[in-house]
View 1 (cartoon, rainbow, N blue to C red):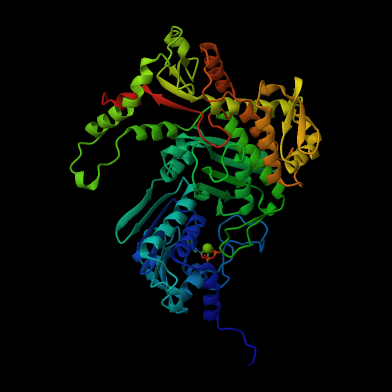
View 2 (cartoon, helix red, strand yellow; view 1 turned 120 degrees about the horizontal axis):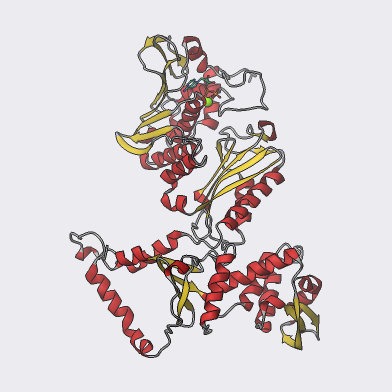
Length: 600
Ligand SMILES: Nc1ncnc2c1ncn2[C@@H]1O[C@H](COP(=O)(O)OP(=O)(O)O)[C@@H](O)[C@H]1O
Ligand SMILES: [Mg+2]
């Protein structure tokens, strides 16, 4: 068979294979074009999830007659004025979206350039261009694509239901909208409004981040906006900004992490890994934080031309970017201090409120809580407690300080210890319930990290060295790491094949269960393998030690001890959650409690 150049329409269909996968990818290209054109309002209208119609209308600078004629030609772009692939400042540069889209559906474009007397329109069907004709349009550009994939029916089979195509479109639009709070967006499908985002005024006098945060709240929900710490880090022309969710606001997947590089939404493994690294200290492995991060750097330091849909990027100095993200997030979370997410209290209150009645009982409900159900729950909950309440295990102590003084203590003044596990404190406008073990564990852990970084961990010699019997492999694992453990404050020696002598322990731990600690550490070493140094696994090791050095649940604390714990929590960063992202305390505002009792 002879070698030949493929006809242009076939070339465009092949390009469409990479760029136009489904309605969402068409919307992405068209909305990016609208943003590149400086639009301040972008309206997206779909029919049948985008299969029958995708229409994107913008109020950007538009195209004149000659530009419109060029726009649908392959490799025609206005965005590389100096043939410079290095300094890419806009979304587009490949010049292939419009011709590719025109090769797989019926494309019609109407556009009016700023200052023009009227608009022009043009259509492309099966790759064939219609003549350009005058048309009516106020300002900007309207691109319509009908019958997506009619020209390549094989691809129709890969489309999902209208609903899931619509969802994918919604996600793309939200992603682009996050980076452009100054632009209004709307999305509708079959005349049903799906998304409406009004432009957030970027008041330069006000907080510069305010518009951005408002837009994020509109998309990700109030919970995120209320429970995120601003991120701000920069070095060598690179900047990372955005918002990091508090660890207690975590999710089962990473779907609520959004990353932008120079305004472009990306899904990049390096960046996702950096977020994971930043939170590894605060979250269990299977939980994921919410975060929105904007990485900005000189265009020459990042290559966006590594993926046809431009969703991956390559940084020249990826270590620098990773470092900025990890450092920026950690700093932000430190600034959040002992704050735990307000969603914790909300979830708690939901636990109090009644579940919806079973279907057979469903009738009109008079809003608010189902009182009879709640009462039944309360009776059931208190019945087994009666016996305990008769014993004075709930201890009321110390007169309460003045309200003004209470205001100085965000976590309040301890009023009681319940079930030997929970400290109940009164705050200026609510109550706080602290899980004493979780909280103390976090405090010890933070102090270990701090002292290790500052001066090395202080050790305390045991008066009588303790012999710990283990199995032989466990003992060998520990002894082979004896030098590293000593640096972390734990001095051990071999004593026969399966026994280890413990001579010194980290002073911070106080009186600790040495046997349990060694057993857990031996298990952990087995998991790490030989290659990693303990310093690299420091956080995990410190976590294990902290757990053994903390106040156990079940230990009675006196007033001074309880208050000391509360004051330490207030002063310690990250003390709002334990090492697994669970909250260490819950705060209920009086207003919430009053609502529970129908007082509001
Ligand atoms: N909504 C729009 N408003 C103004 N000009 C547009 C719009 N959409 C496309 N264009 C013009 O058409 C050209 C081709 O668009 P496209 O095929 O998406 O390639 P690219 O965006 O990579 O340049 C753009 O460079 C731009 O000049
Ligand atoms: Mg484009």
